[in-house]
Length: 144
Image (tube, rainbow, N blue to C red; front, side, top):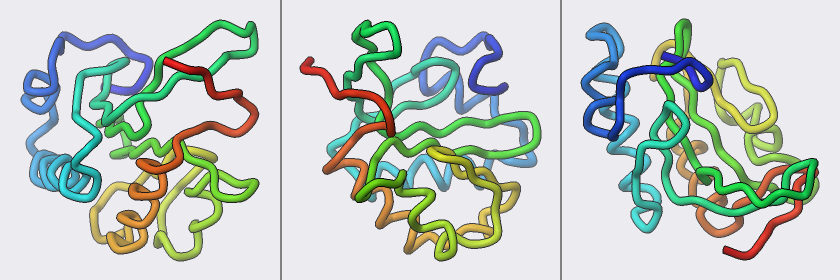
């Protein structure tokens, strides 16, 4: 499964059942970790991943889009956590990249193969920032 590839899941529970056995323990841990860190952001199945909370923004065509504030995805080579929040003028994952640990990251996503690669204390800080201030660089927020 990856963010853009179709899968047969239609719910969070089905998605969790599709996670391969070699990642299941870590994936289930992260699903629980996110829910404990930001309990107001309810999980739901979104765009071939698990979303937590949502926000609206205007895309490049000025169309209103609904997107998860945080998302958890099992991909071919990684587990990915997407975090849509801006701190100052940077995405939180970018701002905290040194503190997050030895992992691959881009503007809004944090990719890793093993849970030991990520600093969970820093991840929790980023998740809480996203809960309070969702957004994506370059996109205007829109009202629900």
